[in-house]
Length: 136
Image (cartoon, rainbow, N blue to C red):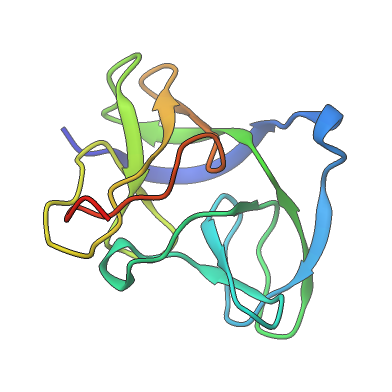
């Protein structure tokens, strides 16, 4: 079953990680987006079809060129259709999440979090090794 997005709310984030950190957006992002980091240090919404690896979570909406708070991990509320303890993956839609692993070769299929309740997910993008569906 897919996660259906509603209004995203950053429910909590772990202060022991020294967050939020402020990063410049390369493109428009919305609060809760899964973000990838460019070599120039800017962030944009990650997309599994592009083979992006998730590094941060957007703390608020932002336009290209704006500095936004970002988190290393977060609990995000505002979804429907989650099954408790299910794995969360990066979606093929930029910035979004899914409970179905991508199977196309070279697409990202790293587990980046877990479903806590039907409406909440825990996103921990840096706790697993990067991978692609091809086993990369």
